[in-house]
Length: 174
Image 1: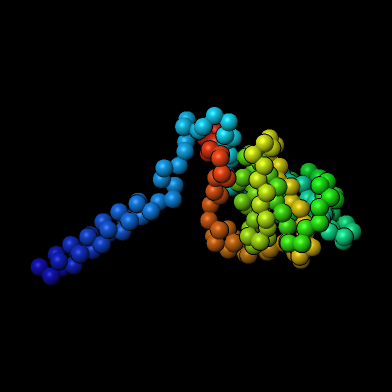
Image 2 (image 1 turned 45 degrees about the vertical axis):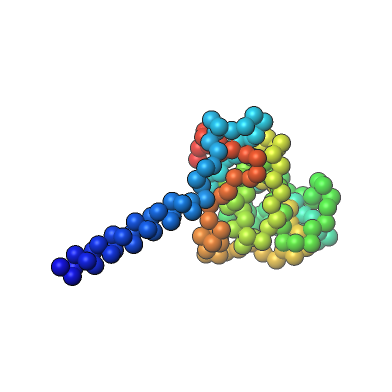
């Protein structure tokens, strides 16, 4: 009889836990592509392997050849480096890095945040149409995270989130 009471209490706790989890689910009520308001871009949230992520590496510091050096580090980590050079916007960045990207590169930018231990500033441009992330290195940059640090950072920051005024892309593929 006592075992039956214990099982009943455990079942009750499980039901309460499930109810609370469903009620607090942050993805509930999200907009699907079919419900997407006109003009909102479809965002690709897919977290890809580095060899499937295209990047440009730009230097926004006074340190010569920094973009080339960091681009080589990213190549060694299997990223597809398209360009390396000085920041075309010619801005000086005091922080570690800025990630500039559009809707087709949301998942790639999310992965790249982990290489900066979530200390890179995100600059989302909803009008950008390519799938490339611009990695702009700032004055506080020292080095990219190790593989272990990247994995831990990805665990800490969770999955990619939809930027404001975007909808998930149902056609996004690995």
